[in-house]
Image (cartoon, rainbow, N blue to C red; front, side):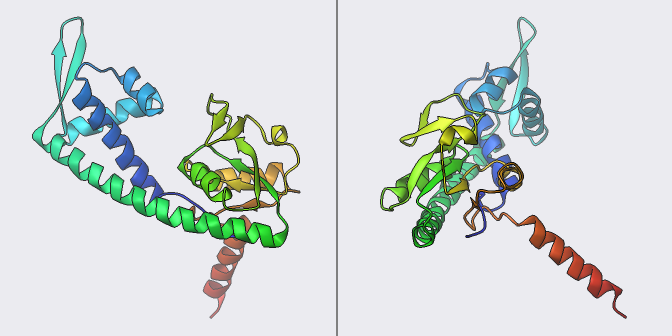
Length: 226
């Protein structure tokens, strides 16, 4: 049932979102630290450092040393312009993401109903999981909960959050809803829970390992032909 979900070009979108988050953080607090940026954006300290340095190299942020061996960060005119551009781009892609995800989730849940899949678990706390939860309100499919070991919350979008699949109880299927490495999540779920069908919407662009191998073999065969 279906393929999978990220926001259009996952890598580009993620980079743009992090850059926008850093530019917003600098505008709000010039005396921020790399650690505070990492915490606010939910990224690794090293990644926050790398993005700050990149913004400085691109001329988006200016750095000044202040007393106590600390630094103050300021947006340059180019930084303000880039922040406006990224904000507009983010809002546009978010709208298209929501609209497309809503349609694909509704279709997938309808397919579940027709296939007798009555109770499913979601894999990953995300915007997509929230959209599935909203779509499920108009469906007969029951959500058992959301599995995500990376968050420290007990509920999300009206559903319980668990650290592992076994906490969900009996389910007819699992649906990938993480927006961070959905392909890896899909393959991990298939490997660790081979008896449970793993669902995903086309938006995530998840490909089946066997399908990829078949395509690779077909290319190799064609290259060997005279």
